[in-house]
Image 1 (cartoon, rainbow, N blue to C red):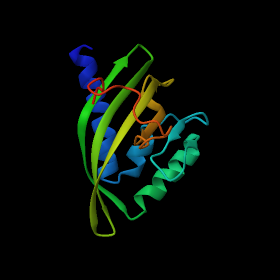
Image 2 (image 1 turned 60 degrees about the horizontal axis):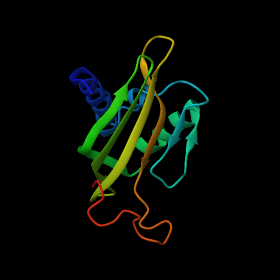
Image 3 (image 1 turned 45 degrees about the horizontal axis):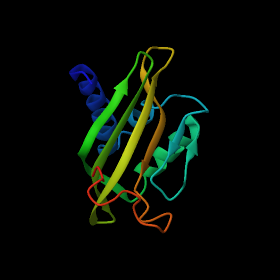
Length: 150
């Protein structure tokens, strides 16, 4: 990936994450494509949110909740690919939050799929934040010791 693409991916994430930390809900929402097809896999407790209006409602609820994001730090990434009209951004982050006065650090893997809208602005089309399940198949890791990436 060339350095201008890397800078673009970093800048896009930084803008979204700073808006979340500062609870600037209008800025958070402005990063999403205003479409009924915009699709978000939230980190929980719901599985997903479909459509810009519901995503907007979700973010308004989030900033009004007891969850206060204090810091977001990259552990890995952002990595991705940029084409003329679409891009994807993947990363692993540590998020420091305050929940009712209790500090907590949570690690998430995240992905933004972004596309250019009719005004040639980059907007989130799909977002996915989650944590790996401990052993969803009950068989352990299928990679042998030393073959894992991380």
